[in-house]
Length: 338
Image (cartoon, rainbow, N blue to C red; front, side, top):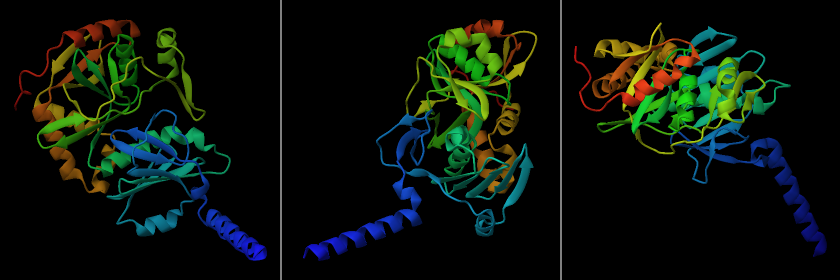
């Protein structure tokens, strides 16, 4: 009898080991997070995100990606090349190939697969996951994903849009220093349910370029290196608003100028700016969602005031910008009609 039990035990251990070899992800720790309304289960830590104990509806997986096989499975993918990265885009499957770093795959709004190159620490790729790949996943889920930050100022939700280096995160960081609540930095997803437009909380971190952190670092407290591959400092603001629905009070397109001023945009100009500051604007045609995208942008400009916020690049003008935003009254008049 003892010999039979030992035989069964050895057989069980053999098949258990075989299962792990065939499916190595089963042996990895699981990390649960909540971000932008997505309950994310990850096979490696994403330290910027908020931990959660809710049932997951999306996953981040470490797995070898066979690019040729994925491309064969994709429906008429379009290819884009930029900054050492090749992107293959189709409506519900997106493949990124970062030369010398990793391949990343997003599928159906429920799965992010990451395949690091040999010698690359997966922890250094976390900013890619919570940036480009998460932006694609939100797009798959029907969100209008804008390139911007969002802060609640004086009870109103203000979104700040602009191209890279325009100061979105810097302004959000300064406003957080004044005691206002951060909602999201870098990715600004907009959701439409019925007649209501809103965003959802991202994660309680702001990433700044070295020059911005140098100017404000002493006031921001302890910072952490975002990644050895991303030359940004990350810090946690004192106040973060954790909510599934935060209304859009106003949107501001950032622009450099000699003085600080705010100008209301006409709907046609506002629409152009929303399209220009869409996180995935260069891939719109490939996602086959151009009509839906313009419909969502039109909903936004009809219901939410959009302004151009002009200011010098000098950090000393940030208090004037903050005061102007505090004094701004929104939510009354409808956006200007053409």
